[in-house]
Length: 185
Image (cartoon, rainbow, N blue to C red; front, side, top):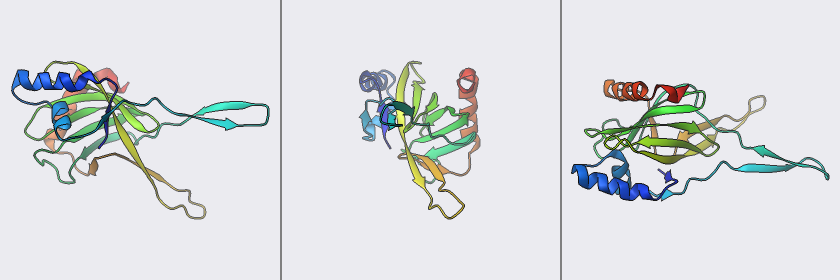
């Protein structure tokens, strides 16, 4: 999984949080698992030559999941201690949900799909501070056949889709939806 941060102070802030509360938030847990952190990249553009006299820029269209509720985990099995999970809702390219580890706290997150990533703001559940993150998108295309173009499937890098939300997953998602109602509008 690639979590990308646009600010380096996030790591030191998470370490302070661990010391302060004698526990760890999901943000610190993700770092402690050795996940790479990189500066988030801006949305790329493609320059297309129309003719010898003119050139225009075409923005790369964001990839997105269809509207709905999703559960992704670092494990294909739910409720695995030490593994991170992301339960979220997608509505017209906007995302609202939570990162959590079983038997631990959760951190709400909201954001949007971009060309190569999901750009998120993660809210630390203890300090209520906001931290920018990006999760790279994995795109896999099925082979196209005559009369049937290739379909691109989108997944979150480092996470596997899980089919069924538990009652706990739904409760966590509902808390985030109550706390950040405008995130999906």
